Amino acid sequence: MTAPVKELAHSAVSHHLARLRSVDTDSAAFRHHIHVLSMVLGVEATRDIPVQPCRVTTPLESVEAWELAGRTAVVPILRAGLGMVEPFLNLLPDVEVRHLGIYRNEETAEPVSYYNKLPDDNPVDAAFVVDPMLATGGSASAVIETLKEWGVKDIRMLAIISAPEGIARLQNEHNDVPIWTCVIDRELDSNKYIRPGLGDAGDRIFRT
Image (cartoon, rainbow, N blue to C red):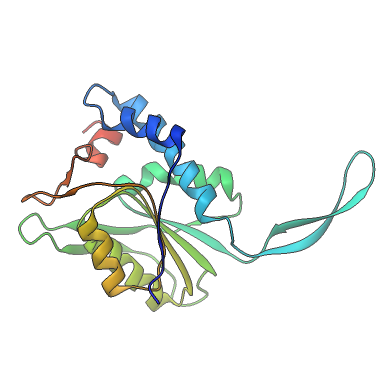
């Protein structure tokens, strides 16, 4: 069975997406909208991760509660994925940040790995792969394959804007990995850019 693709249907998400797409949005505002949308994606994607019972004392009494169980990691696809990390640090205070550097060869549109500092053993229990744009799916697929080789059993893909072609590739190559996205756009153009998209997310985040 193929893991689900969950496209968020939310009025506030639509609002922030509109601002994110606009050519008139400057880098500071762009980063703000990335942050908000990443937080919403993070909340949705962590809805069912494991918890364990604990006991806490309120100012009035002791009560049974729940806390997160196991180790989690957020894995930004460099460089644009870095813009989605901070919301996870706020949402999951003990989350690990694991960097995997992947860039797209502009001639072949295929991923090229240039940075990987994962340890040889001791994988996390769950990993959240984050990238503002799921375009061809090549970089995301390569990162997911690397995480599987590390031994991660629960991998989840989060993208703010996705192309049907990227989704199809992940479902073909990693059909056990669920995808959360704010919106599925129309298509990739001849240059492998998402249409209507928002341009180059990394350039707009880092003002380059």
